[in-house]
Length: 105
Image (spheres, rainbow, N blue to C red):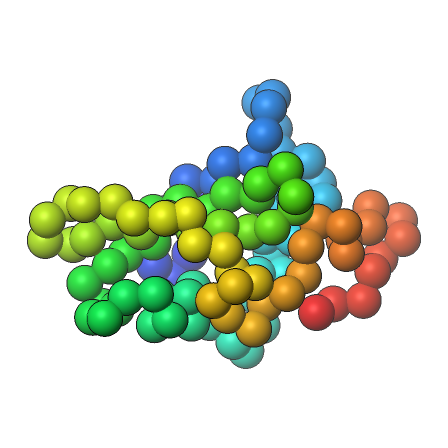
């Protein structure tokens, strides 16, 4: 999926197509005035610009996690959960089907 950080892989369970609720959760994570990816990166790494996000995942608890790759060494680190390292606290349980429209976090 394209982001301002480049293309990120989205891991979200089984099947060919992600669940609409998962897509809505990821859209909420990426949209808005707060850069949650940057907040996680700043919170986790000593020199944040050396780490680029490569993967977004939604786990079985409905939490968003991020995996990063070091720009020089290629070392991969993660999963770092957004609700532990940024102000984003919305989980999959907070997102309803498009018919119900839950309030945005």
